[in-house]
Image 1 (cartoon, rainbow, N blue to C red):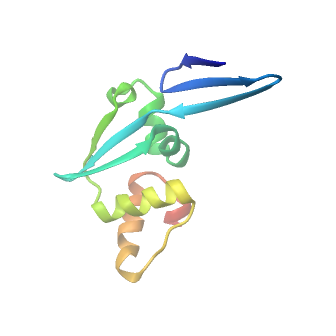
Image 2 (cartoon, rainbow, N blue to C red; image 1 turned 120 degrees about the horizontal axis):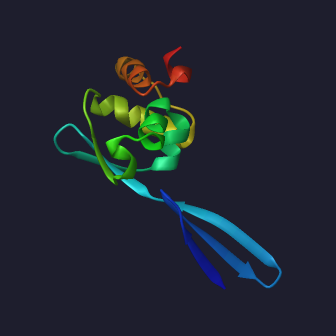
Length: 116
């Protein structure tokens, strides 16, 4: 038996197999546009938990809270890609050419663990 419950930004499913119940959450995916033509998909919950910037964007009464598409300005493509890697994997791979992008993005997204 599968029951579906809708929440604000995700769907919660409860699956029951005889005496075992499993509860899992499917987070809505957000499409992010960087610069003029670069698009990324990301989970709102992942972004919010990793970044104070996204946490404020999705938890307060901001216009982006209910949208499934946002456009980010003021961040480089390289910086965003580094932060997305960090948000999902908990680490980043740095080379000399990407250090500046990493510092820029960590300040932009308020991620102090990468900026220090």
